[in-house]
Image (cartoon, rainbow, N blue to C red; front, side, top):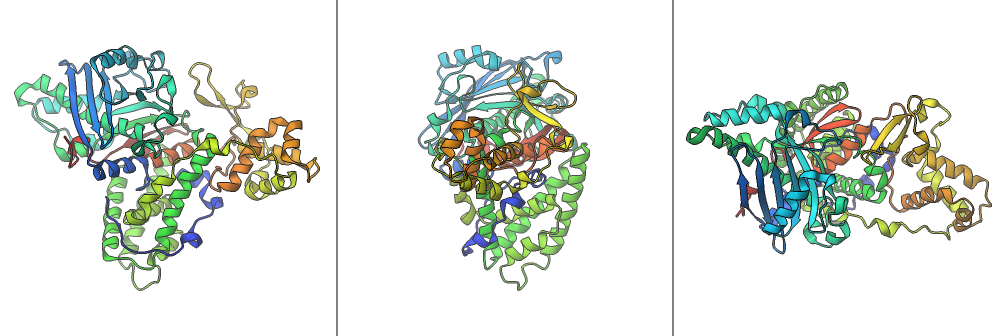
Length: 555
């Protein structure tokens, strides 16, 4: 939905939610995609700039094994998804990061690849980490089929029939990615190489483009195999059924620490979203156009909630809250906006009585009609993290200590003498160099703990500062106690970026890593979160959105 509002807003500062409310894990774990999600940014751009799409290479055998190229042709540059489809033995199929073979592998190529490029990529991309790519590749990814649904669709289309819609809705995708790597991994282009390109300057645009083109590949592949099997009687996917298919993703602990390791980026994402909500709340009127857009968005949200299923007890409870609260919102809208001043703020304040799921869903709904005052905030969601790396050694110990007491009061209040508050530790696996979460009481390796419990580091720094002359400089302090450099930097960053820190204990027994994952994935634009444990979640991307070949200006 891309409707915009012509309503005007006053200074929204008074309507901004404080970090103490926003940056708690429970709320972050209830995040919903919004029009500031990264895939929505991509879709708006390709329409506005009249991008063209084609498929210059399709070399697939009857089993769907071979290679293909999908091109996205923008006003200045072309990007190509190079796809390789494989005949994967069933015993080798796994979504775990330790996998060494997949149903399909991909690279996003900078430009149009030559035959030599395709041959080079075919020798390396299917091997993923074991292969090598270069600066002409912007991302590296892999995907597995949703085996049962993929086979069902092939069989139905081959016989000239459409797949069962209930089976399609239960899964929602033909393929799910198990990793989409960018930003210099395995030899791919560093972020700095492409960050000044307008079409890639916003967060994760290369990765979103790769996934969007992968979605097109998944439906092309299933139709190709069905046509080879059924011949002339084979059908193509119905357009409405096809649109309800996204790209699945299986995400584990590897993603969870990202938000902790990139505090400035996290701040910019959260601050943009909070500024967007504040701007909407500050509006003095609700135009008929924006009211209708809100009703349309609510209808879409209710339909999504109906089709969203999970067997995980945490998510089952959240879904129940969400469906109930969407019903309450629908009832409230029957008499809204009425004659209340600042009707958007009145609706938000009414919604503060909803569950966290309901509140965060309402946030997404309120942003939807207001592209004219919201979409520009996408330009503020990237970050030059190197700019914040330098520590201000001229700051006094007293000033730094005060910054900790004001910005990390939540951290200083945690009792780390309680074993429940130190029950876990983060480490990096030797085999895959991926983040993992261990039990301090049951597992070895705590001596290799990663510095991800910011709360405990803040307490340690605060204690150390207490033993110093309060007029001393931070530079003097760090010369004597350099082990605190990491936390000093974060404390200074937090002064400038108030939404930079997750304000919870990340090593507590009851901490849920899936809350971190859901927050990040919602910014990507993910929907239908389906946790399989507290450390692993499946989601869908681009579900219900157009395909590249559907775009008005497709080639």
